[in-house]
Image (cartoon, protein in one colour):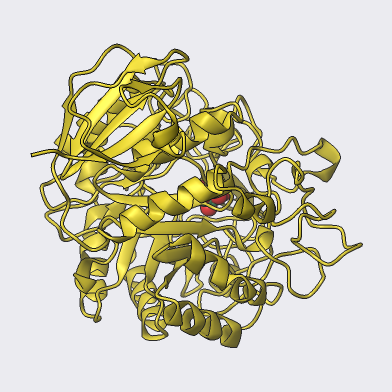
Length: 522
Ligand code: GLC
């Protein structure tokens, strides 16, 4: 079981800068996490994924790495990280780091050297190209702000590629030496006891060798369909990337227990998503963005789940998540802050076969926070029709004090806090009807099954607006309507309800937005 500990397990994504400040500078840090590990143990998570911890000039808050083998001084030291891994391990939790292999910071010594001259031995670590005939950028690719993805470099008279900010030059994965560097990086952290990596922009490493123009996008520029009117078919999503993950998987498997590779696989097509699992020889987990952007209805969610399970190889473990530091928080996107809906969302995702990844604050129903422009910190989000990303990066709401218990009294946190009086850990811990108490019960149900093989899944007939499914010995019945509905028989033994104690309610009916997990009657 231990070799596949992530199957049916619960991971917790922790945005380090916003979780707990231990030294009163208004930024969360590693010592802060250590001080709150008892909470995560109490909650019942099996592992934590830390947002980037490596040194960085923070143009994109750590997603612009300037040293892959270090720890950002604002977050702590490498000894703090070792101490965190150790302390989490004592509580039965594993620690994953965030790895950014698509690009580095322009302050990374590799790029500084690469940009020094055309003859630099590191020139080919990055994607350099001459202007198009007649001048201008080499092709039509745009970055995530909608600007040309090419930055002119006066010193060497060529453009370099950046799919994100100009301060984030893309690495050139056609160069074997780049592979070698990352094999070394992987081993460095795995040797220190890191349980695995979340891999940033996992679909993006390789670019078309001929740098062909991206074709226009016929559809509306949705979150997944295209990028500012172009389909990103040549600037990312290239087939060569799979060989990288086969290589990394064999490194991961050479450890005991095997290390986990969890991809940020930002693809629209579920068959493309499934390809990242390979023949059980690439990523063990790949994030499912079509689910994130699905509507919050029985049919919409059930249809993505069915297509996902049909597309994945038999050995593939799906992973369900609905919030993160880029896409915002599901309690806002799906639930408009309504706690009954938040519990229902947690219940339907938590009972599915697969791994569950919670984003910090999901467990108390934390909602997006409107950060005023003068306090904004994110340079990359908020372009075109894309909303800014600060809204989902605000401090964890621990209690109802001014900073929500995130930092010392009187200290200004790096982003403003949300409504700490409306939602905080301290109050919800005391309240058996809270989202937090519910979430903890759900995770304890999951924990009993963590590490076990995936159960089968089947959607069962139910009235319109109701999603009823069987997953192994569990039956889930979820009412996605604002009306009470009859609970189809047989109900079996009710293990958990979003409405709390079902002894108090009509045993044959579901309340509006109520969901129930029961165990199958044979
Ligand atoms: C990923 C990260 C995002 C970052 C981008 C560039 O999508 O999740 O936060 O801005 O990659 O590294």
